[in-house]
Structure formats: C-alpha cells, structure tokens
Length: 104
Image (cartoon, rainbow, N blue to C red; front, side, top):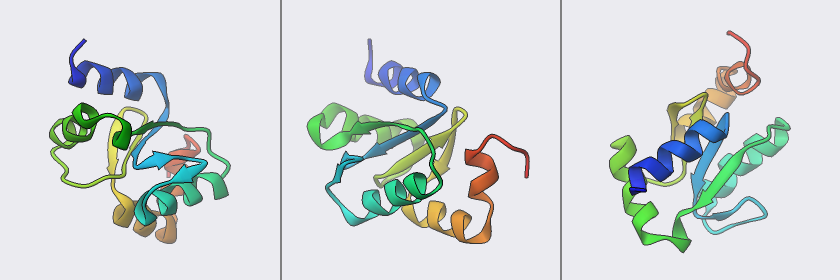
C-alpha cells in the first residue's frame, strides 16, 4: 500500500480525520492542540494520525493535500484546512454544521 493509499484509507474510514503532531490526548504542537480542542469542545468523534511517528506520512500528507503544514483536517472525505482555517470556520459558525453532518 502506498502512502497516498494509506492516507485515503484513513480519510475514507473516518468521517472526521485529523493528521496531527502527537495524539489527541497529548498534542505535540500548539496548532494541533487547537484543532483537537475545537473537536473535543464540539464533542466530535474523530480519527487521528500522528505524523511525528512516521516520516513517510509526514511528507506524504503534505503532497496528498498540496498543503504545506500540519495539522490537516478532513471531513466527509474533503480537505477542510489547517489550524487557522479551522479556527476561522469555528468562530464564524461554518465548522459546526460541517462537523455535525448538517447542511449549513
């Protein structure tokens, strides 16, 4: 299985998927922690992958999404964005219906 196939499998298997530094219980960067905190605050079940444990994943996810930074949030198979975008969408109210599977 290629790294792109592994990433796609994670995205397909988890309605909400976060590629992050660390794990949800112990994020290893402030940006990852911010996105985890939003998801936990909204009581969202999500899958996660720790890019620090796997250099192939760390580089592969950037190529997969054509996005240079971690964390990366996917919902319903679609790339939402990184920390700044997730925070902006949360503050504007756009993220909640997306995460809860409701049309805005």
